Image (tube, rainbow over all chains, first blue to last red; front, side, top):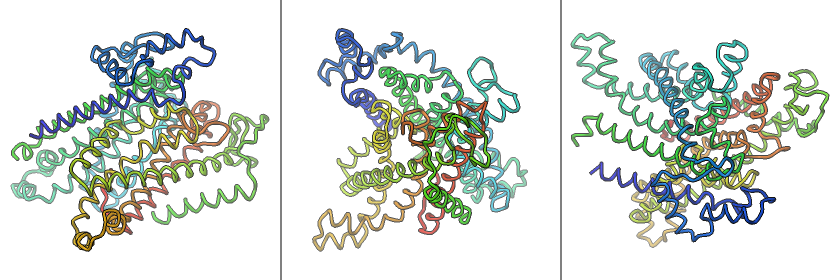
Length: 304
Length: 264
């Protein structure tokens, strides 16, 4: 029952996302064709582009064409470079995925141990320090953290490349920038959910059995405490994907976020539309997966 | 921490007033002092056109707060109306409205605001419009939940049985009980709207030159980072201090008004 409900929700949301991104181009004040081509374009050029984008057809028909093209994997063509957008997305998307995944790993690697530490020291100064730092780190936007990291590690210390993606180490600074905010949130979530579990009876039983504290925490407590973290990770993938837009711009990382910003600067609306769609759909799919994973991972949910 | 928050907010208020008293000119170009570091003449140094960074930071804070307050008020009104309708009537109205909010929530973070700002074009009005179009959703969710739990309270049912109309029930008997939750939410959203505004301006989608805006200044700061690192550090530091102070103020309100709110 849950599965069916969740799938229906997934389908309606996907449809809504498609509709909203489709309508984006119609929000352009005035004539989108004129905005894209500039005032100097000839009327023949305008008519061609209008026909190519299907803007001369009724709205409903346009949406139908848009959907059927999408179903065939056709995202249209860039106005400026004339290349197929599907190809552009195909070359740029892996870079963003790589960045997001590494940020996720960094976030998990910092957040979970720090959260466990904080929970074990609950109420003491170490815990208070970690909490204050992590609460505030989460509010640190990428366009501030990014440049600071860049200044310190690339310009002053010269350990890492400033920007671009030529070398293997280029990914480190953007990934840390993105991962930091995530680690802050994970620290707090781990702390809270571990503290909730630590008072449970089965933990007392485990301790009474004479198990080492290490086994009690890692095997018994963390197993239950990790569940809410799955949901948080799924939700936070969204801010990773959105944060990638800014981080990729700062570090000249050629991912989908930078493609989006470039297309906005060139008023290449079909590309803008496609980037927004791809990122939003990734997020919808990630959320569906985490929801399903959560149900699978939690035996209590499976029974009920 | 409370004191810290007051001190920062107080400093900002003093600084903005001082800016007016001494007549700082954020748009005054002086090409003799391009990208100078902090000094006696220019406390925060100068930018790539020799403009005083302190003056521009103070100009930027006004613009940033203006946008934050306007967006917060508008999104709150829309969100409250949608949320109360959904929560009070339930059923079809509720599922339709929540379907719409689900769709808006499917766009991660500020992506939708970026998309709206991109197609609407740059400028203050469009910036506010883009942030409003995406910002109402969280209020709608919050208000819906609150309304659903409040509408079955005895005082509401008593008022209903005395013949109070829907509008009266919503605005006289339900809304006042939500104010503390909404005030806390508004405090936090001031900070997040400021970050969103700075992000959009950073991408060149927000407030346009020559008006000072923190996002645009950060963008320039990154551009000239190799020659003038003070630029990006100072502007970013200012933004962080203000966000921190507002968030701490939100924490204080939350504790004071005894609102249960999970830190997102």
